Image (cartoon, rainbow, N blue to C red):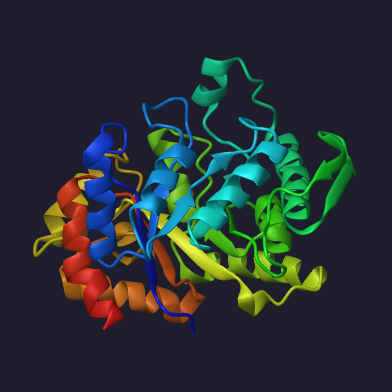
Length: 323
């Protein structure tokens, strides 16, 4: 069973810059988090993830730095490959390269980029991953696919043989998780978040409300890995959650959450759901332990709703579980 790991996003990431940014990432390292994550969107005021993470790498010693996640459509894979190689070297191997097929239509509308159907974006993601990984390992890369064409591309950088950034790919659908099984070192198991309405979100949460459903998705990843000769036991599984509340009054906290779903979920749906962590610290820790035991997921990323949540989660959950 893999050891627990915990990641977090800085909060509020849109507003932290300059000395405050450095102070924040150093605090996150001291609090016991494994990884500092940064998003990649045009529809927020977040900065460029590689610039922010490079500065964090230079001012921390053990903290891993990760993108959750690059949108494949915002940059050519050759650019991503070279940037990731640089981060791998500058951080001493602490970079976790997260990349996805894109899911926020607002990002595309703002830039005028075409928001292609999911199948097209996933196909483009797999081609990009093939190019990126080849540029980390091969002296020259030539590739001619449906979406990209490269000829005699130089290696992305000086990367020792057998090393490269860890690749993160996440999703909830079978096609994307199958791609993840072929390429990723870390796989995030997520809901399908294409429908942002309360009904859509409620249906997504309900569809993942059992450990059996999560394990079904994990099996898609492992079957895909085995089919290409990879050892599925080497893959690390991750979830991301903002649905966490450490409280001695879980009933009130859950009632407030239920209001945001217009009555489409029940109290039991949320209290027993393996992705909702609402209750006192002992209850939350027990649910995280059960999640790892029943699914193998050991890596949790906290999307904090306040600066205090990052510290509270460290004190009440991370440090006791890592003892």
